[in-house]
Length: 190
Image: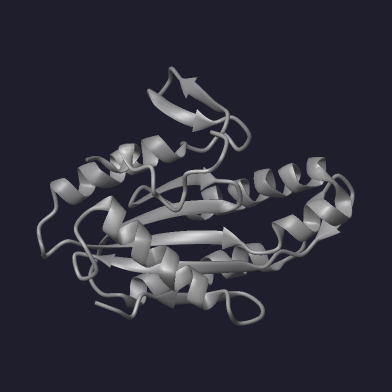
């Protein structure tokens, strides 16, 4: 079963995200952020995992915007959506061709960092995310501070497929989220 068919995925929401097809690159895109959508991301990740050997390590980052609900409750849905757009632009601006990036759903983004030689590169990328999201976001005249948690799982150490790696990255993200402020964590289990 492919990741797209998994009904128990931690990223399957009650309502499907609005998506748009980009004729330019043939990728389904999230209608709000313009980033590749969850299904396109999973498909690309599975392709990379399938054609990688054990010498090609990769890091799957699940990036969760921890305080989006509070932002929406305080400022309204339009500001929450604006925050997602600004976050997507900031994150997209720091990633290069060795990374695959998408909005998974709601306040979760996914990043696959390919061909890393050790997990220090994954930690460096997590710190870059914090640096780029640490400054307040200007959304429709509101200065918004966001809190981000990142869970990271490593291919092939923690798994060789989307379902396994995403589950472990979500576990790490949830553990990181138990502490106040911005946090990241590499999955520690087997």
